[in-house]
Length: 113
Image 1 (cartoon, one colour):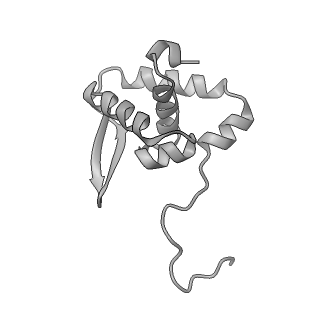
Image 2 (cartoon, rainbow, N blue to C red):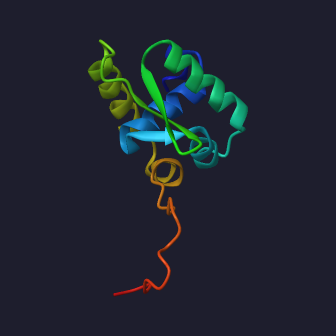
């Protein structure tokens, strides 16, 4: 839907994912979208160079999030949220609602309370 505006379908997916999750790394995005890692990394790099995203290191992983100093941040986020709302529910659930654990379970912690 927004790929024609941004001339890249990966940018559309990244922006919608960040609206829901706030931050992400390239590997997480490529797994969520069943896409190759290299195009995702290139799109993230372009968005960072343009000032829309900012990145930082968490351990050895580069994590991307919205740049709060970007002058049109509110408008871009509103556009991405609106585009997300028009996606079919099955695509919303399959690609954007990640229920995967980000870290291993603590040793000895019970599965259920």
